[in-house]
Image (cartoon, rainbow, N blue to C red):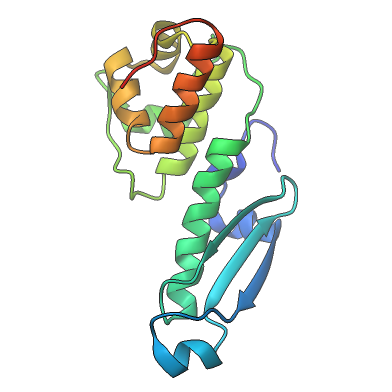
Amino acid sequence: MPPNIHPAALPIENLLADCEVRHLRRSGPGGQHRNKVETAVQLRHLSTDVRAEANERRSQAVNHKVAVRRLRVNLALEVRLARRPQESPSPLWRTRVAGGRISVSAAHADFPGLLAEALDVIEASEADLKRAAVALGSTASQIVRFLRKEPRAMAMFNAWRKERGLPSFH
């Protein structure tokens, strides 16, 4: 993995090069086709042992795409890169923040990489939201709104704040 690039922000090809991919059968809706064909996709990121799986669809290709997305979000949540709070935001982050507003949908391919960067900065800022917002060139309310797009990220942020005796956000 290149230095200072979070695995959640890597291009899909690079990310998958460091993954074990398994195809499995799963039971459930979809009938006989689903029970006879290995449509479920399970991914394991070898460097971090972070995992994701998708088996909701009858199509292996669709399940693969969903599993990659889940893996990237899981990596954003579980892997922290050390950084200095005063470090400049990444070019990716700068393309998504204009006038302090963070412009990205939770469904967008850039979301996991941006989430990872925001969490890295928040952790480096010791969960001080104002400091993190300044470091990211945004506002505290925009950061909270962004984190709310992934409930597990919001829960993690509030847990960090609680550890430091700071009030949580709802």
